[in-house]
Image 1 (cartoon, rainbow, N blue to C red):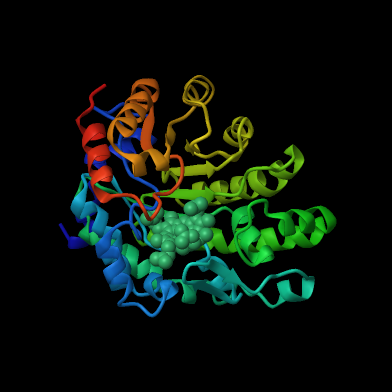
Image 2 (cartoon, rainbow, N blue to C red; image 1 turned 30 degrees about the vertical axis):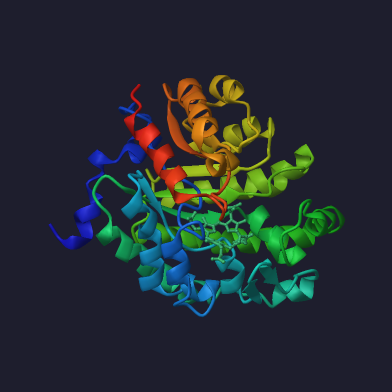
Length: 353
Ligand code: CP3
């Protein structure tokens, strides 16, 4: 067996089996942002890079930070260390991560600015990410699934138009209402870039793909359909065609009851639930159709103790007997004590159906 194929025996992988509809001994567990600032070893490695983007584009360092949480905790998956904003960066938009400020982009607000963005360099620009995936594919133990990811075009576009995160994505929503033809061109460009990026990720070893639609909330139904569901459906169809059998997890954060339509119309294989989704509703309306992932409150993980134990038990009792991937309802926050993550993982991995 070549070293390349070490991680390829998929029979031991709880996450992959769950995504294919098999019932395993307990729900697989991984956590959004499982690599990151809550870990002292991450903060140390981060200092070796010039800035956050440099960390993403340096395969040795990106492999190292991806593996850090797996050395501490018995997780069922590793998620590629990268960022959803590598796509605008690869398209030629100016992207920077400012300390304490989050991402800052040169906003795209006109057809002219959109024309300056080019698909041509995307593959070359993102080649280091594929090297990270190949490194991970060799390094991971055989029961661990390797997850690749991208942002959904809508969520990526909100940063591209607005220039930074905003609570209501107002600049993007106004742009989309005012000039739907222009905005469609932006969405199409991001969708095309995302399809080739994710195909390359799978070729480099990603076994599952997650699409983060972190800003899917607040949209009227026709907008949600056009800007979130349709591009997601196009990505899923393209991946199914080129790489049949690779599951896609969709995470329409904040979509509420819109998740029903999202599940019915995108073709995703599993749905990520944000913290606000009621568990019984998710069990009856969603888990009856496909595996669900989520949705422990990241702040229960900060609190720890009885609150964490009780919330985790509630999750397992309500969803754990069906197709369930244990996760948070959004990413781990930096103030999370690593011991609380250890306690959570122990509780989930010792639970049995
Ligand atoms: O461990 C993992 O989950 C994998 C790595 C990962 C990162 N970002 C690393 C990161 C993943 C999957 C993402 C996705 C991402 N990035 C999303 C979707 C998920 C979500 O949180 O809603 C979004 C919206 C982004 C864009 C982004 N990147 C923002 C808004 C920020 C700043 C906010 C923050 O938490 O600092 C980032 C920076 C970022 N991405 C960090 C990490 C570890 C922190 C950077 C640092 O070390 O300073």
